[in-house]
Length: 489
Image 1 (cartoon, rainbow, N blue to C red):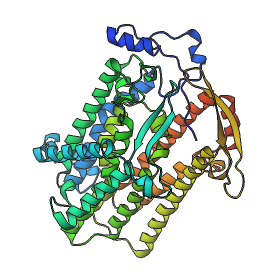
Image 2: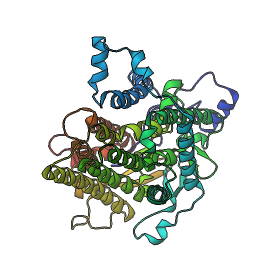
Image 3: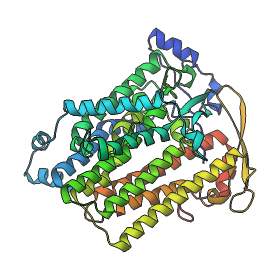
């Protein structure tokens, strides 16, 4: 359900620059009363870093970029066989330098492509006001309120992601079928040089966000300093870093340019398959359709996304900045990349089965989220599964000391397990992988990763909820005892 708070106490940093002291004093970062840990208003990521968390941060900072490179390189040089590089290195058939020397380097063409792409998305985000909400029934766009921050602030957002996605794809198809400004395979043709470009942006925006948090934070009271520079760099310091009134780092980088590009990347893969083999396989079509449904759903519900854990509780650091620029576009699209190198034509029965699994998973994912949204919007005065929903009353405090009240629903899908939306998400993720057959492990990375991510998110989410709602959360978990699978977990 709804993410909750941290209640750990912040340890004041001893040696800081004068400007940081000013910012920290504004947010009460330097000195917290002994009873501060009893306040339930400070949620978000940790105030303090244990050795286990620090080890995880160091591991991800060191190896996440190498993982992305390894997957892309395995496809480029080993037909997507993940064990190929390891076996060749172990047997002495190749050396690390040999693999690196065959890897395309950054090119000016890739720099121009990526700079134009990001600039175009900034233009659509900042300059073009949303009009889709004026003529699309049921769509919520335009200026919307976000959730209350730990400091008690409610930010306003320009919700125009669906419009940006539509405009971008109109331009893409207009080019492919009429203007011919660039090849539809332009993305995959420059795939590895683009990898270096995305890394430059990912590291740049993450570093800028950290510097900004020290010297000119958007809201000092929504900053968290642990005193550990590695943890702060990765997990972020500022809660909602912004430039000006409307450019919100989290909303832009979470949705654009990575997720808008997701469907374009898949289209480029399909175009490459057509170029290489003279046809587009049904497996590639399935991957394009199922992942496009997910992407369009994300933008259709962008206003709802403002109330999710990414926006409500994650601070903006390397985890989001680099992750959205690099990890998402390169690893979330592995199925399409795999099918370029290893085309798969499924039987009609298998194709229908994969499609049904993906659609059922999407239905569960969407309807579960819809029930929660309906429940919140109506304050429980609605009908779910033919009945008025049951719920548990609960309360919590924000950082400004104000008391707030909320309801946790225990009806509909939310009465089956506590995170049935994640269950549907995992079903959809599995369908993408199954479309690729069973010859290689690489396309199944996504379901493995998503399972780890969502199970971890369940645990992290519920720890915050437990801190935020206290004994009321215990009543909720007693009413709905399982997280993802009834009777199992």
